[in-house]
Amino acid sequence: MTIGEISEKTNLPESTLRYYEKMKLIKVIRDKNGRRDYADSDVEWIKFIRRLKETGMLLKDIQQYSELRYMGDSTMPERISILRLHRRYVLEQQRKWNGYLQNLDEKIQYYEQSIKLQNT
Image 1 (spheres, rainbow, N blue to C red):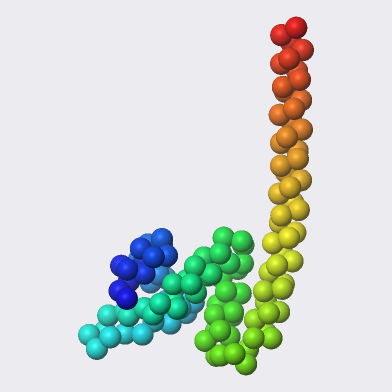
Image 2 (cartoon, rainbow, N blue to C red; image 1 turned 120 degrees about the vertical axis):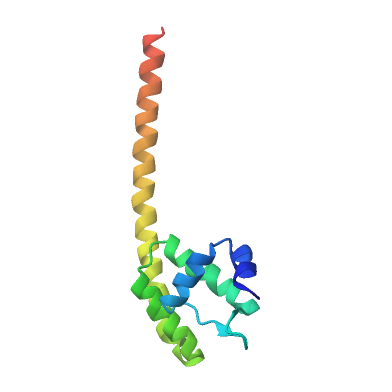
């Protein structure tokens, strides 16, 4: 599929897809005219890259994971290690954000109670 088609399927701009290719996160086959020819399997891979980025994985770690992925199934143990490490990071961030949320809820509750007292 073309870069425009995969852009639509992944909801990423073409410039991002070119960047991913430049950074060696994705390897794209070229047709006889030199145009990018994405495979169906690239769609899920690109979506996974996006999820890794959105959960805070560093680009260098995504690059390492991608390199291992393209090396084949023999690298699965190493990829699991990377994902487990990132999972711990995501859980740590989740705990941190839950604390922030609790603090906001407490502040909102304080203001609501203050307003209520002022109106009585």
